[in-house]
Length: 381
Image 1 (cartoon, one colour):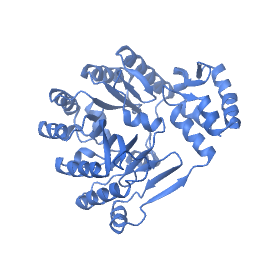
Image 2 (cartoon, helix red, strand yellow; image 1 turned 90 degrees about the horizontal axis):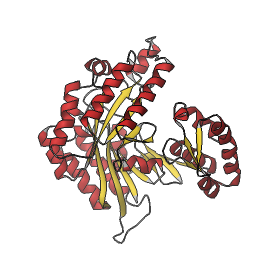
Image 3 (cartoon, one colour; image 1 turned 45 degrees about the vertical axis):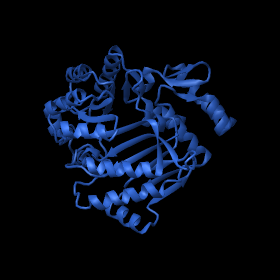
Image 4 (cartoon, one colour; image 1 turned 60 degrees about the horizontal axis):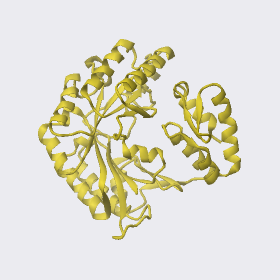
């Protein structure tokens, strides 16, 4: 089974930390939907896994962005109908919509359920209005809480909320209050991301002009440790560096991506993966529409060498609770890379950064999770 990701490249306003592809000018939205429908049809054979009806079976469908909740129910219905025309949706498919809190009215929530969308990912980011203003979010802290509670009253059970930490000036007590509020909302999934200043963002440009966004390393470590402690105490399982879920509520779409299940990406800047190659769509709305209208190639492809596929496997696997399987490396990438991995991992095991589980599964310890990016880079071939 495979996953399908639909990138909705629009937002009502710019969040100052965000480096995902989007535009605030939505004058070509109708043409964009037509182009995405055309790409869905053209992608129908991409993964080459046919069921008895000759269609690819889709296990997860994810509306990301941008801000997918900027679309009307009619827009979403058109995309879903097109997906079902060219693909087979599994009867138990996970269908996720990323949403801004202020879009989630009672009417919209009811309409989403009527469309069989069954998972919400709500961008709360912070429960403090000062933080939200600094990030240029378009909702208040109160609206964030009300959106979650409104969804729960409408019968939504599979809900994720996004939070950010490592914000300049954030105290440990403020982060503790945010985590307590998240736990009190009783959502089954929580994603928590440390602020990263990316060059193309508003924050990145401010940093270039000399604005200080640095957070002391000891503050970041303390906030991450508090995140782990609070989530564990509340019954959340830490199944990926930034993701926590109660049993049975892991994000199936993201889990499949981390475990290298093939997926199709539709829309400007969307990526696709078939284990042999990576593809990425043009990151320009007008150009994307133009190329799809002409049915000219709208993406670039990179065929993966053995070493590149190995690095991809390390990158996606080490971040998760399932870890790196040494037997998988030996089977798929050869004895040379397997021996090199085990030799490099030995030092990290000795120093308490990696645990060797059952002799051939390597997972990050809590200490290792603090420096996951560095460890991953060191393990690349």
